Length: 491
Image (cartoon, rainbow, N blue to C red; front, side, top):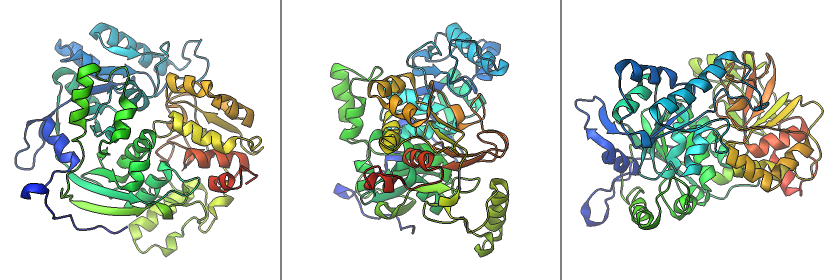
């Protein structure tokens, strides 16, 4: 992927156009940056969950402050909630305490909460969009790095730290360093079995985990225009894994159709006025980007990570790379450490790697379209391979779960041998009961494959929902397109 010089053309009238990021930034600046310092930005929507908020609420109490605008806050429980036995108290004392504290904090401060007994409960980055709480033109923050997900709606969305959670609750503002706009154009038709997860893993493999550092990454091109909102959220969700703080997609009719009628979205005349404004939230012709690059979607194959960072990925018909062939000594050393942790030998075919467990879920891939994608591979394919110790499907929210059950997707998964669970972050990270044991290998639709991310000593391979499903049936990493092209025959 080659970087291109910024487009130097101008918008009609001789005025240089503005990027989508620049439009969003300028809408929210309260105090501009000075001498290379941060700017003060106004925050429209604050999403809160149980892990990063307790200290923030304690800080408010200590300072005898109240949230500045309670109606902008939406809370849910997700990171360390159990996905089974919801009729019993949470067994882990820390998790139970955090869930109970969030309920108390929301009650004391008058904030909206989707708790475990609420059918709308789910992963914060699934709940926000499906409720229409994420809207174009907003600034959106949460104490989680994958808040970039919400940029799929042309929102300036980014993760913040615990102290910043308190700052936003108290002031509705936040200091933030400016970013440089970067555009990734993706063009071409996707091959069968290839989806948004494969596109973004291919992009990260080329850019590296620091390739977009300091940038707000905008996804554009004919492929992106054809993607659903769920798929666009997958792209923006993992923009952070390329080093970007923000991921963005401009508004189009697909964006507007997705939001129409959602509970938090404007209604009536306010809706018409909002839509007219939202349609301006695209990069202007001639807008200048600090960097531009291009990805040929037709050339992308299903991707699988082999190492311990999201950029350590290759196509499913590839092989584990050899550090001895890498000229960069720092990168070669990282590869050797990763191979040692993952217990893989250079040159191993990806298709020869056999996971012990399969996980379909997370804020990257737990929406209804992701479940449909996996179920399409499983239909008529028999049961999961005997070598797979466990296969989980964890919907992103209670509403996703209900919709999947209405469509019969839960039966497809259960009949194939998957466990059908309650919504939550689940095995994306080792903060709940769904964890890998030391040495276990997992085909996971989550977003990070760091050492111990899914449990101490666990080994994570990032894949798409379709690849996860095909792999569960075959018992080894398998191209889902082969199954789809063959009419769901045996892989």
